[in-house]
Figure 1 (cartoon, rainbow, N blue to C red):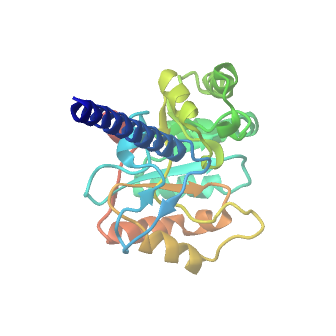
Figure 2 (cartoon, rainbow, N blue to C red):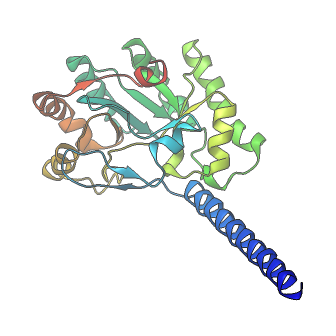
Length: 266
């Protein structure tokens, strides 16, 4: 009896230890997943030329929050987007190039742009482009945990956009500087927004330290890939100068262009 009792106790002890280990493993796995989703900065890892990069959160995980960084396709299609914190004279040339090639892009704008350049905003809309929400004040949204404060950054821009154009703003959101948190993605989704990161960008935002044409083409031609969501800055003089040729070069590589609505409504 003593031997049997000892065996039973040993079995219970083993099962308890096994259950504890499983619990620790599950907790660690959840914590690891949360850490990935709470990453402060959007980032990419590039592999072979012409292949889609990996994001620091997978496309499948982002879809849980109605968020995107690349399109789920192997077609040679590009979704062209521009971020604009202010206007410095380069947008007209960009719009001219887009019109010449029949490309509809998405411009993610902030409050300052709407306040200072309403005529350019109207031109974007009239020429078939989409205006998305880049927040009113361009803050670090990843540091905002309050729903009211988060929503205010988006709704203020919506209201000003409607005053200028008479239209409702598309529910497309891009976090300033790519800074975000899991709670941000949830908040944006609850507001009916689709969040858009990117799968191709380059350092084009320093107004007084612009890349050369050669540097721009080196990045934008070698790293283009099927389903790319491309981020360019309309403040870039280089982008204004090269866009016509860049679009031609991409077209020669077999790429076509589609609006973000192709993803959200497809």
